[in-house]
Amino acid sequence: MFYEILSFYNFPIYPMADLVSIYLKLSKEDISTVKFILETYDDIALVRTLDAEAAEIAVLATTDTEATTRAILADLKRSIGLEEIEQPESVKNDWLLTSN
Image (cartoon, rainbow, N blue to C red; front, top):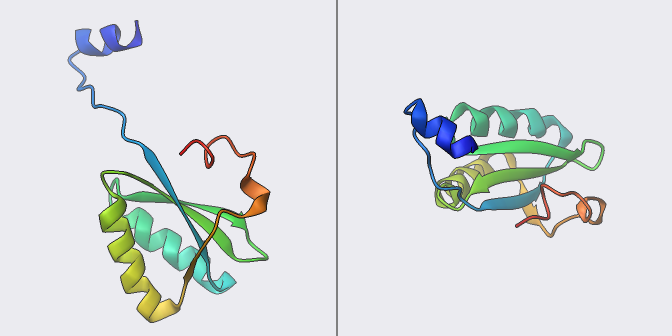
């Protein structure tokens, strides 16, 4: 029904892309920098702080934007130093982060 309403009003319907979670550890001071830079690019990725004290974040990209997101992260790694980590234990039951 939802898609029928959208098509009636001529809204474009895009296929749903899979979500990719990239877990990072960095300095607390750099969380806002990474968030600002990634979210400045329209429709590339979102940043979710997992643990501010441990300075762990999740970068949420789609399969369509993963390569671009990883390229941006590689560039950031040279200037601020961040490290990709395994999924933290604290998010094992998070419906959004474990759905991929």
